[in-house]
Amino acid sequence: MSIMLVRWIHTFFQKHSFLYIHTPIVTTSDCEGAGEMFQVTTLIGDAEKVEKELIKNPPPSEADIEAAKALVKEKGEAVAQLKSAKAGKAEITASVAELNKAKENLSRLEEQSKLKPGIPQKDGKIHYSQDIFARQAFFTVSGQLQVETYACVVCSVYTFGPTFCAEHSHTSRHLVEFWMMEPEIAFVDLKMDKEISIMETNPLDGIDGIDRKNPVANGIDSTSLVRSAN
Image (cartoon, rainbow, N blue to C red; front, side, top):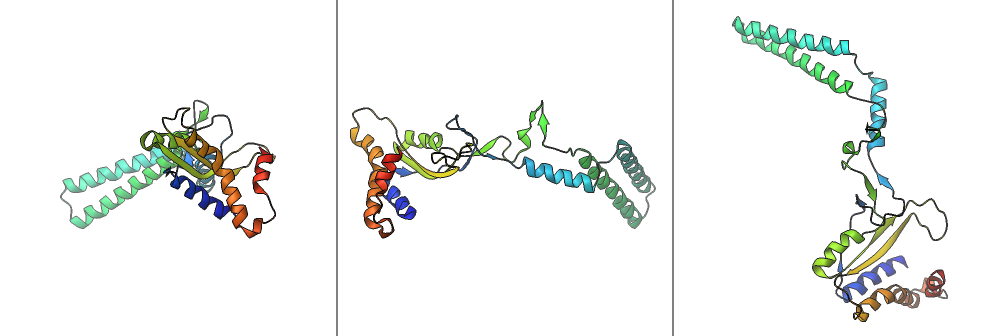
């Protein structure tokens, strides 16, 4: 029945010259501003990886880093002396390899010293600049903001897709995930009764049509159920 309803919605709006817009599921916009949103973040996973790494390889001390810097300096001077003395190519190559190895070790120690346990914070707040999108991101609660932009260009548009709501409620009127249909018409006035009526009649007409065609729904008045719920 859901497949038939989806097909009905797209057929209906395209018949009335509406353009379908697929709006983002992951967004940085809080369209409604009133409900709770599911947050999308990699900070928690990254923090767990850092904690495991610190347990496996504890952060180096200042003495370890200073010793590594001193070794790099020593190896660098050794290479300079060999070049100044016009030593053989093989000897210089071996000395340069030791210098590069010392530099790599220093770089590894310095990077490891920057690792801090827990979620990164700045000024007492979560530092989202280190998150995957460099800012807070959420599962969408509505595609309205995005689709309104298209409405200003092509006038009649609609979006129909998954919507998420993180309300702490377990009633029949609060769903965690559902599909929402959102038509938008730009430059509408009160004289456009026909266009406005399209928005009002579409859902119930679609369910009526599916009831008549779908043998599984035989004997169930879905339209009455929707109206009684409203």
